[in-house]
Length: 625
Image (tube, rainbow, N blue to C red; front, side, top):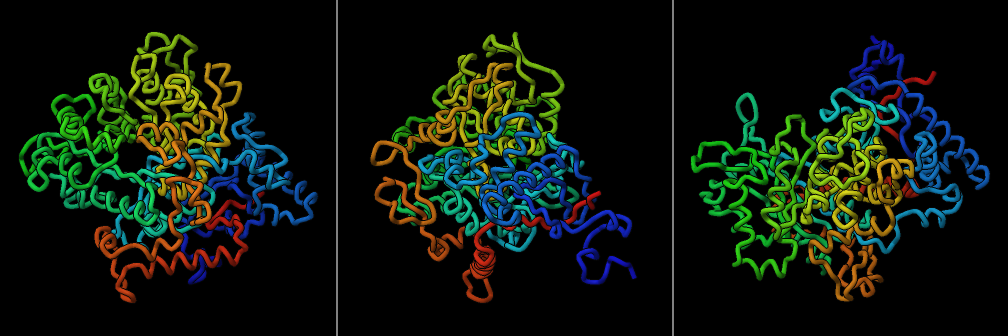
């Protein structure tokens, strides 16, 4: 019998050989348990890389700061490492090792919770998160089945999104974006409605969220999945249908007695989708039945029906296609919907997924930005919100860091150039921000940060600084908008914390003529710009944050924004459960027992631990030398 692979042991459950196990130790047994991971953690499917020199330096500095602070505070180092002061120590250590002041943090935060509040997001921050996701609950999405691959990369697991286990800016492999997720199971439960509500409305400062959806359906069958033939087939295999999206919005606003959620309608262009056998013109059907607040489309998705053949497959499309896309814009701007648009000011917001492409060709249907300026100029009455800021690399943006380090730049001769110093050519974001800029006389295109910010702020902060710097320089602070792409990456709060603290180093500002990322600019990015686009105002004529955690005492002074009741789970009506296709529970018949039981267990464990993080990582790490 194997010395290590004892039946029933974690070693037996791993894919490691005896020789590999000799080089490893359990991450749970790592006594350091820092607030941020400082070396690669494996889930047992692949060998973790050794700790890099830069990671060792970050770890050593965190421990040094923790030892100093714990002595002064009269607590153990382990107790200190579960406090907000340890988070501050981590930001300080990262700044020191990077040699850049990427995060606004002061040494006093290690000792005084009040000092932490000075640099943390303020209580009066208005946040309109324009990209939120939940998933349906049919048998295919059983709560205990494996979840979304996007969560794997946020947790730091090996995944198809980083198949080569490429390094981050400090040399770390699969460094988690959100350390709070490390070790948690990646299952559908984490993305369904009950957990979604907790993450967004109880555990974050989101005031209003826009519930989004994805038309990138792949129909199973044969050797390979195929594109859908029609809208009905496509929506059957999406995370949410347009009807489900609108139903969740209506329920959230009902239980909160205020506008806490908006909903995207789905864009399906092409003549075949304007004469669908079930819906007729699908855009008109949504307007008249679902009342969308804005629109979401994927040019890279097979969502355009180009003919009337019921057997033909949908295709990709581009924003400036006069035969495919423009008839869809004509429906949305039809004068008969002018009154509807007056009461739903976001109706003319066309939110388009661009980038995050696994293919590299300069093809607008895959995300290359050449189709944006023509469409924006031809349709000035529409606002084009370009999601993900058109970044070409996939979810692990080492490619973008290599773009910066290559010395390749964009500059004079490119339409939209402002005459300043050349900037790094980050594919395809730099080109997008220049060619769709105010200097190109385009004022109805917006840069949205969903996933692009999450994928870079912790692992590639230099890339993050360049993208925000270029956005401010070419678009200005009035045309950048915040989306977290949650709950793929956990609750939005970690991104809110990181963006509020983030700053563009002075060296980069001087070299590239980037404006300062001021608190005024951050407030606009977090919510005020989106509020303008969606016509959001409260009864007092000013924007205010929403109370968190069901704080009824704040209801009066917060104007229109009332808390989501903390007993929201019990308020989910049977009609909504049916729409979302919740699985039937053999115990109660309402499909919520398993969900509630798991949340209760998580809550009980959290409270039993003193409601403080334990910083445990679950998996395997290399033995220390």
